[in-house]
Length: 192
Image 1 (tube, helix red, strand yellow):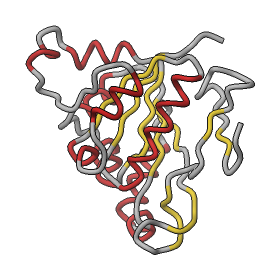
Image 2 (image 1 turned 90 degrees about the horizontal axis):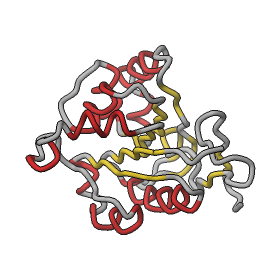
Image 3 (image 1 turned 120 degrees about the vertical axis):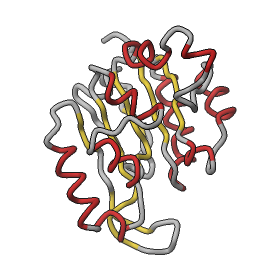
């Protein structure tokens, strides 16, 4: 199968550091990867890390004068064969579920026709919250969106329960297919 153009969205949360390995694995599998980070993600990891791993500039702002001269957010939405948001915070999930387009990542998700995979990651109490679950139900009704996880287990705050980013040891099965969403196979706890 042909390599895909993957747009990786990274939102704020401690699981953001795991996305660096995801970029490396996607590149190793032959995919083109571009990264979009929310302001919250930048509090946990730096754009420079993802630029070095992807070989592409990292986008962090909807209103970037250089990129928007050519309607960059629309071009980026059209460029992607697949959008993966990992980790997807409770805040991001709520904004996406309600159709908000108030930053670059939510705008791209609203403007793209590509499939969108979301890997929720948050504290177990946030995951179990009624409002979060309502937003998850809305997202599950969207045929463009697939949810990957979350997993259960120990969390950075010391709690244990659901909310951990799917596949703590996330690995892509690059031996079977270069296609990550059709179908997607995430291998957990074993190296490929």
